[in-house]
Image 1 (cartoon, rainbow, N blue to C red):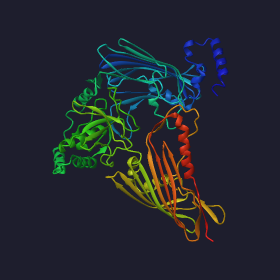
Image 2: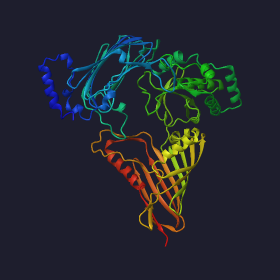
Image 3: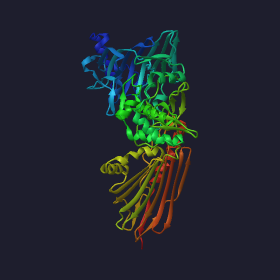
Image 4: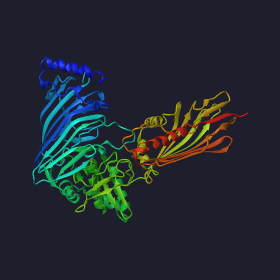
Length: 639
């Protein structure tokens, strides 16, 4: 549609020039966007400039300008104005204007139209950060928005990075980044993918700049690597910096850790005398440090709850352990610091550790800078290293699957801070075992006794349902079995084994009209009733990126089907085994007698990164799994 109207845009633009429209009213008309940048794009950055002037280790000016053309509704978020500020930041000289497809100004945004509100959510109790935000809602597309502003900040611990490609389906015409800094400050620089994107880099004395031009939008693909690992980027940190008025310096991780201990953690480990005595009494006579730690961890879980608190030295300093002790709440920083304080009393060594929680992401070990978004507690033992998640009252001791597992973290240890990888959970342990006995009644309705066991990373998907109200539990299982029509849940029993990190769900089901008629004498049904594989990823003959399976799993089904009197099995699918570099699949049907079979299914999908050339084989493997799961059994009335 956009390209079809290109001639009309050119014609209208020419007419506007003839009528004497001022050149300043025509910044980047939409029809001048190169076609290869607008194809597959929701928006195109026409020009983006980031100019950073580091005046000292505790002050810098950041001047930003963004000119972006939005082509459709999905591109609107790219044109948002959003910036955060605190008492240590001043946002000045904000200018926002909107232009139509021909480059004519249609709206100037005034300061009172920009929202200014606290950066908080439903879990945040305190936050000294605020947000400035504006989103333009258009009447038609395309349109162009021009945003510029200046930030005067005393926070130099977090430097703006060169990151020109901020999302999928975003074309870039020009993006420019420059940093000027004093000669007595050293830049810690981490670059990626600059050559593959032909980024122009210039580095002179006290000046560093990057430029990206004419870059086509990235179209997302199923099972692809995270976007942040694919795009050109330069991350910058200063060896001397200021965090909310507190100066620091770090040329290596040891120095960074010592600064954190001295300026963020020191003197914040005191608890009440009663709590101190409780911990001593609780662990008295226990020699094994791990057993002591279990007692302390459970004490902390029973006493506290998680609430986000983003105040104090830019949200990085934990509230004192004494306040957590008295108020019985805290955020991840505070609860880890509190737990560590209790471990110290019990004589158990533990260390405050900074991590990226959520989707797997490493602390960048060769880039010394403030990193991470979460804190956990490291517990070194003679056999292994344990990691404690301190924000949940329900998670088992030493269980971190799903949120902070298998990634590099920064362990803060006096005079010896270091980077270490957290526990990796093998795919075979991330298990969902479904065992069932299904009785087919004479009217061909089903009654099923089902036990589902979730372990490893799969434990995190379900353990919370034990604390839901009965009607919410029932709704959960209705959704879980949503692929089965005409289902009623008669009974639910749940058991949480925290020692094994396994969650057991026993459910009694009644299912009507699951078995379908072939004719008056023959009937059919799918034996893989509970865990049938879902939709296939689409065909892609021109795959661009490697295949990434971030979290593998092991699904095991063991289902006994029992026929009523008067029926027999007429057809059973053959046993099947599929081996692939991506995993294994096995289907086995065992006939115990004329009216009883056992359906066994195992599907192991392996986590890992695979070459893009394997995508066709990957899809074939999943297609075979899906086809096998759809296999039918035929039964008939006995003669």
